[in-house]
Structures are given as C-alpha cells and as structure tokens.
Length: 150
Ligand SMILES: CC(C)(COP(=O)(O)OP(=O)(O)OC[C@H]1O[C@@H](n2cnc3c(N)ncnc32)[C@H](O)[C@@H]1OP(=O)(O)O)[C@@H](O)C(=O)NCCC(=O)NCCS
Image 1 (cartoon, protein in one colour):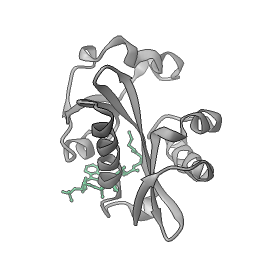
Image 2 (cartoon, protein in one colour):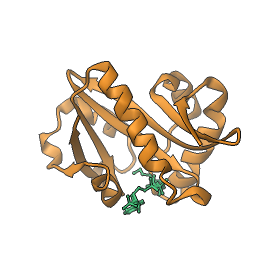
Image 3 (cartoon, rainbow, N blue to C red):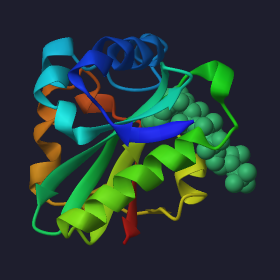
Image 4 (cartoon, rainbow, N blue to C red):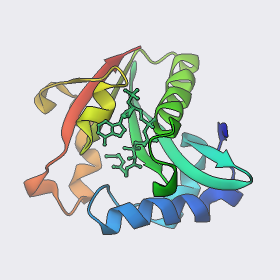
C-alpha cells in the first residue's frame, strides 16, 4: 500500500469513493469539478494500482488547516489506511508550516485515536464556515468539531 499525492487520473476514483459514502449521509458530497480544482489538496492510498482511500488538506488561514474528505474503501477498513491518510495530510501540513488542524466529522472516535480532541465549534474562525453556506445540512449540522495541534 502506498500513500501518495493525488494526480488528475485519480479523480474519478476519488469521486466514486466519496460519493458512495455521501449517498449514505456519512460525509459531504463533492462535485467532480471541485475535485479537479482541488487535486493538489488530496493524498490517496493506492493498493495494487487501485485507489482505495483518499483524504484532503485545506489551508484555512494563518497556521490553521482542515482535514476533509477522508474515505477508505469498505473492503479495506481496519487495516490502518485511514490513519496513514491522516498522517500523510499531517506531514504535508507540517511542511507548509501549519500548526493546527481541525476537522468536522461524524467519526469522532476515529479522530480521537489520531490525536484530535473535541472543541466547541464556536472557537473555530469564521472563515471555516464558508463551505457551510453551501451545505444542505447547514441548519441541522450533526458534525463534531475536533482539533489537533501539530
Ligand atoms: C473512518 C474511516 C476513514 C476509518 O478508516 P480505517 O482505514 O478503517 O481506519 P484505521 O484502520 O486506520 O483505524 C485506525 C484506528 O481507528 C480505529 N477506528 C477506525 N474506524 C473507527 C470508527 N469508525 N470508530 C472508532 N474507531 C475507529 C481503528 O480501530 C484503529 O484503532 P487502533 O489504533 O486502536 O487499532 C473509514 O471507516 C471510512 O472511510 N468511513 C466512511 C467515510 C467516513 O466516515 N469518513 C470520515 C469523514 S467524516
């Protein structure tokens, strides 16, 4: 298994992974055009030439970044891919000079195992909420805000 930066040729596979969970209401949909524009933010897990996981790092402002769009193909759950993808994004974050990462998640127990702690979402800066304005769940958001100091 290899964790590497995403390439444009991976986008269809990443889109397929995210869409499957988004249809189950387990994560947010992302359009394919948004993903092409954002390809530099993604790391992927590749197994025998197949994309089996993805995760994105978004720079928010100052020293703050966000972990987004984490997904592992269900046949590969529990094999350490989710952790390896988050660590791949953390390495990139450190290289960029970020000092804090947050995530908004429906899987807080997974992120706790990866060193994130729950925070009051009100402590996150306003700029974080620009994506929420486009989210269909904006008035009944069930995601938990979590942060990790790098
Ligand atoms: C959440 C997800 C990324 C985890 O990926 P994974 O590859 O199975 O996770 P890992 O094997 O790296 O697990 C790392 C640790 O977290 C634990 N863990 C994994 N999923 C967990 C969960 N849902 N709840 C609690 N702990 C979990 C593992 O047991 C492991 O613990 P250990 O170190 O004590 O052995 C995966 O279940 C997934 O893609 N889910 C669907 C999409 C999704 O919910 N994405 C999150 C965005 S909100």
